Amino acid sequence: MQKATGKTKEKIDKIDCKIISLLQKNGRLSNTTIAKKLGISEATIRARLNRLLNEGFIQIVAVSNPIKLGFEISGIISITVDSRKLDNVMKELKKLDPVWYVVKTTGSTDIYTEFVLRSMDELNDLVYNKINKIDGVIRTETSLILEFIKRKYDWGTGL
Image (cartoon, rainbow, N blue to C red; front, side):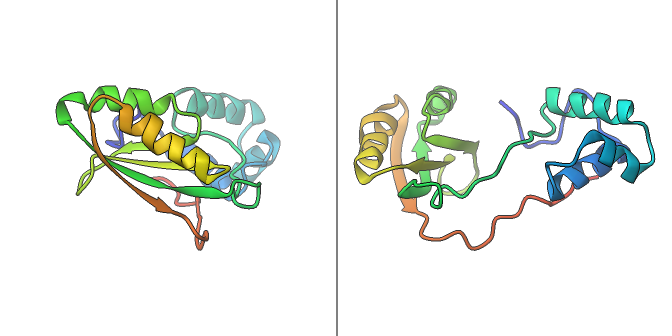
């Protein structure tokens, strides 16, 4: 599990930050293009990019709009958990295909998840037959996403 503490095996430097920043704006940039923009060799970019990927600093994926892709339902489930069973609940949530995002949180709930589904029947199955049956789940609260207003992924790095 990745933690949001910022602690990693190896730190990233200013060059890594510049690579990340460029890819956050356009994930399709070639290593050659990045190398030219930063004035360093393509081999250096390739090696650094491989390290950033392998160590979990970044993922390179196509970010899609699930509603436009035919998923009728997209939403959020906030989950309150017995704190002694938190690890088990998170492990079980990671196994559920419709759940694409799972984080441990502070505040009124313990876990925040996001999901995409094709129908209300699938939502019913996910909430009542899967999530609520996980040992340690005390309560769930489901919110449906009606419209994506802002989705932005180019926040840079914390350095």
